[in-house]
Length: 354
Image 1 (spheres, helix red, strand yellow):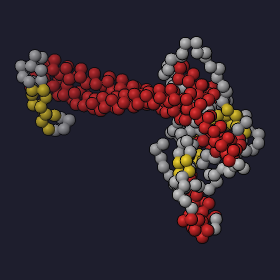
Image 2 (cartoon, helix red, strand yellow):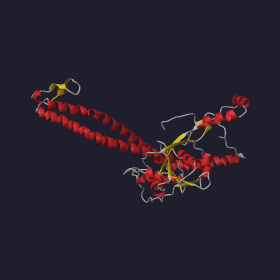
Image 3 (tube, one colour):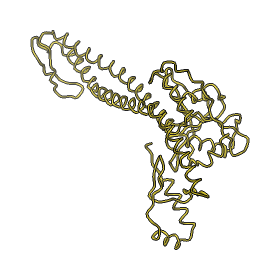
Image 4 (cartoon, helix red, strand yellow):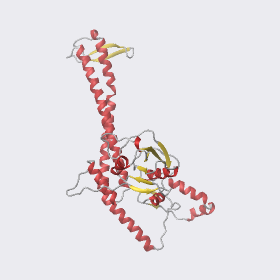
């Protein structure tokens, strides 16, 4: 995420709680309380924020809940570790490749200089001597003198053609490198989306992500490993109590939802410029602002910006989406979108799940 704006959610929540409570009591309690930290598997905070504590009737129930959650996390981590390691390695490799390609592109910036030297040698051919390693000519591009290096083994005309060939070679290299850079950027974007999906996946979703990575060629299928049957996108019930919102939980589901299941006139949502799920409001071609907000919050929650306080989410009709030829799963391009700003609420998202 490249854009930062306002306060983080934790800070904003704590400030709100402090401002609406007994200020003197809160002030005194701060100094009377021991130093505590609110720790989670994903992040930590230096204090216990309001509404972040969960209470249990007994120590036994607390331990049951803790170890049940821990066992689930351990199983997920065990299943995901191989995939996470592979994705991280592929990301590192492609980022290095992109850096090298961009450096090679910078090196082609003198292509125009070769063309100009070829033009000058051709124009002033009668002034170019044979068997010399350089010549000084009037440069009508800059109105100054220019010294052009020559190959003594070539005629003046051959030297001019040599510069034109260098120009053409670099010009073709620019076109080739530009295509490679776009391809590498798309691969990085795809791998980042897989990385985000893995960070939010349960056991079933990890199995589907593995199948996705097999189909895209990043990992090999094990011997006797069966092709996994693909699950459908998840269903959520909007707060109007009747509108269904679908969410793709991996890139294969995203493609199926956007290009096979969704109708052209339906609204599509995606967190702006960051990896995340495709979200579609189904069966309601004129959803209320409230339903649009629900869908935007789902797109924000199932994105890399899940923990952000304010997330920008693009909204656009499905018919305006484009899938580039040969594009990676989940990759789309579009223009003409509207952008909403929402704050994802985990409790609300869970209550909407069908």
